[in-house]
Every structure is written in C-alpha cells, then in structure tokens.
Length: 361
Image 1 (tube, rainbow, N blue to C red):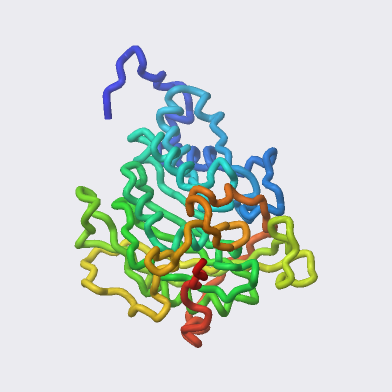
Image 2 (image 1 turned 90 degrees about the vertical axis):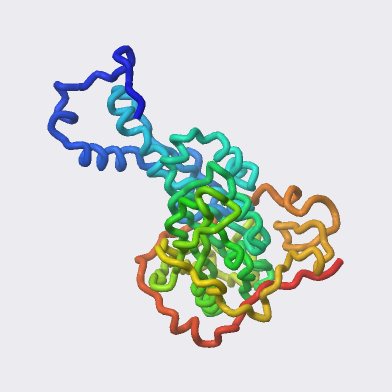
C-alpha cells in the first residue's frame, strides 16, 4: 500500500470511540451493512416489465452518506461500495441502461484496477439465443477487467425458447461444454425459472447440466485452461423458491397463463463451486441427440431473430437489431427456500430436453 503524505494523511480520530474502541473487524461489519445497495423506490420499474421481480423492482442504489463523514472512514469503507453490491446486466429484455453487451462492456472498461479487485458479484439475465452458443459468455470472460468471484446466471420464464407459444422447455448444453470461467471465478450460480406447472419439464435439463465440470482460464495465459482446478456442482444440493406475479406479461394476456390475475413461478437454484484438483480429459456428460448449436450458420440460414416475437427474419444484424427490452413485470414475494432433490429429474430424463431447431427461411 502506498504511503500517504503528511499533507493528505487523514485525521487519526483519536478522540472517536468508533475508532479507539471498536476493532477493525467490527467496523468492517458496520460498513458492510451501512453501504448495502437497496431498491430505489422512487424509480420503481413498471409492474408489467420483463425485469420486474423479487429483488429487482427498482434500480439498486447504494447509500454513500457514511463515506462523507470523515476521510478516515472513506479510506476504510469505500471498497465496500463495490464489493457488497451485485452488478446486474441483461441480455436482452432489461432496463435500457443495463441491457446488452455494449452496456456491460462500458461498465467493466471504466473500472480502475482497485475496482477490479474489489468487485465480487455479477449477475446476468440471459435469453436462450444469447446464452446457448457460449461465445457471448466467453467473450465477456476474456475481458481483462471481468474478474468477479461469483457469477449468477438467471434464466427467467420469458427467456426460454418460444415461451409465448407455450413450447416445451429446452436448452442446448453447448454453453456449458465450451464454458471457460475467468481466473477469479470461485462460484457459479445458475437459476432456472418457469411456471410452477412446467417444472417437470425443467427438471431433466437441470439434472443434465449439473453433471458438467467447468474449466477455468489460466491467469497468465487466457488461451489456456488451469490444469489444477475446475468448477463442479456435483455435491451441491439444489434449492427452490416460488413467487407470484401478474398473469399479464409484456402488457399482453397469454392464454396458457389461465384466467386468473396472477401466476406462480418456481425458481430452482444450482451452484458450481471451485474444486482444487485436476479435471480428467473428456470429463463431460455424453452428448445427446440435441447437442447441436441452434445458431450454426452452416445449418441455419438466417440473419436476424426478433426477441419480441420469437420469429426469424432476414433483415439486419442478429444481435444489434434485437429489442432494447420490453417493460414487464412479475410481482410477488419469494417463499421460504427449501431443499430439492433430483428424484423427479431422474425420471423421464429426456422429457422436454434439447434446443429448438429454427426454421429455414
């Protein structure tokens, strides 16, 4: 740590009981609570937006008043503004200021070296078209300033393929096969969400994905992977929670949501943790008949996908022309978290699994 000159050294606050009585550990505990981000209720999201949900009813805002009390507190506590916050980004259908890869890159490019070290937690909300191929994730993982310890990927009900038409749930596992975590990553959390009555379609996907052991990039060479560590979900139990949201989504009524004003969502959470040890070559689940990339240019002749209508068109750039986001909501409270087993998932292991094949145009 660089020495502070006498001209800029903070007042040691020798008469303050906060500094003379409380040890640093207790002061840090106070800082972590005082600087927690909370929802800015003066800017509540529209309740019919796709991104309105428990924990995301409004933009998160940190209360930084404490840092202005004195310079010594600022020097001790300013890192908590970065480390205690979860930094969320949407790909696609999110608040415009945090949606699409350009906004994400602007944020990480602007970080100073000390901010990169302080940042702990990042969350991505990802639609299937963006996630499945794996290229978008790995591009972000290669950024020099993207060094979180924890990454949460949330797949919302409206992120699944053709949810508007009540299609069976499906997901390609290519993104897991080609997953190359940034060197800093120690925990990957994957949240799967759907309507409660469609949970049986989601279970086999969760069980299949859980088998993957994920590679970690080498710190000194991003073109190589670590030989002595990987991420695994093998011994981590699943958890589950539920919440209620309006049956209207995107300002529209959906026939398969029923006649009521609300629908119940279920969220199943899996977690990959850092494992010290060698990952044996080829230690991946057996490829399935659905193991093909729905966006393979040699197989699928299309240029553009409309995230509003889940339709393929022939105009414009695939990613650049996607909607900036549609304001939507799903309102409700999370229920008590409880443990969830794989017994249901192990029954009918192929039900509803695999990526959809988009039509040729």
